[in-house]
Image (tube, rainbow, N blue to C red; front, side, top):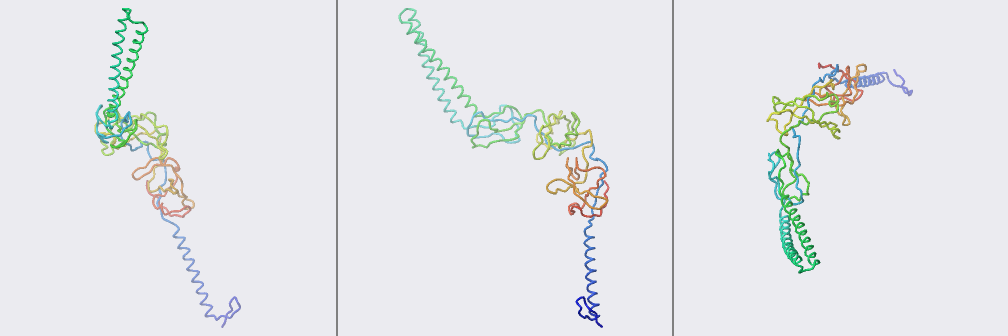
Amino acid sequence: MFAYSATGRAVSFPLAITLCALAAAALLVGCRKAEEAQVAEIRPVRVVRITEQIAGTTITLTGNLRAQAEINQSFRIDGRMISRAVDVGERVRAGQLLARLDRMNEESSLQSARAQLAGAQARALEARTMYDRMRDLLAERAVSRASFEQAQAMAKVTQSQVDSSQSLLNIAQNRLSYTDLVADVAGVVTAVGAEPGEVVPAGRMIVQVAREGAVDAVFDVPLAVKDAAPANPEIVVTLAANPAISARGRVREVSPRADPVTGTFAVRVRLIDPPASMHLGSTVNGQMKLERPPAISVPSSALIQPGGKPAVWVVDAKTGTVATRNVELQAYGEDRVQISQGLAPGDMVVTAGAQALRPGQKIHWTEAPR
């Protein structure tokens, strides 16, 4: 028995049956792979449903303690610094020697000024003696008035030279004293700006001293928190290393411009009677009650950064797919982030499996308790 193929050639029935079976098997395998691929496209994820702005009305930020006034100690003259007597963290008293310049040039200038003054004084004394003599002779009509006036003028000129030389000597003495840099105020050294051996210009910061007394807690505050803060809020400041040590404070200063890199605003909080254990430079936490809930809180695992911008995966319940949505971050916590813009109540956000998704991908989700 023969069958005919599409080309009109005769083919035996057993061979035709075999070819049909192979074609059917290939079709079945292809369908099965397509089904498996389709099943593989559906990824399991865990989501959290946004029900409200749950960040609460209290915000916590981390900062550090600084003096209200930090004084830059600088030399008044140029020179080569030969020594620095203090380092960062040391306490200094007012009038204490901080650093010293090479004194050779200034000592030489001082000696020259002294010699110049001595010469001017000798000439002035001689001229004064001549003036006194001419005055007496003029009274006796023994000299002419012109000779007397000449002696009088010389006495004035030489005295002017004495005054000028004395001024130069005072300047030389001051410049010699300026080779020693002494602390204007008592406090703690917070920075140094030069090392021994360097040639430093006048006015360059050599040592920075934080003045003893008033202390500020300084925080970098996001715009959303800044806008949500009440007028003149009370801040509770605690040591990060020991939260039992605390102080209360009031906002003293808010930077008018945001940091160009972080987008945050520097806020200085004046501490009221801080305990002695709150040292300058200590890391602190500040808590403030806000007038309104500032953000939506989600697990930090939900955060992705495509293109370097913060975003989350949001689930479309109708299609069972996900899409990225850009968000604005307000603050980071240990295991949660606070989002000020981009999410709304009712949104479902992927919190587990977010790193393996792509836009439009189908998912199977499990809703996690909040």
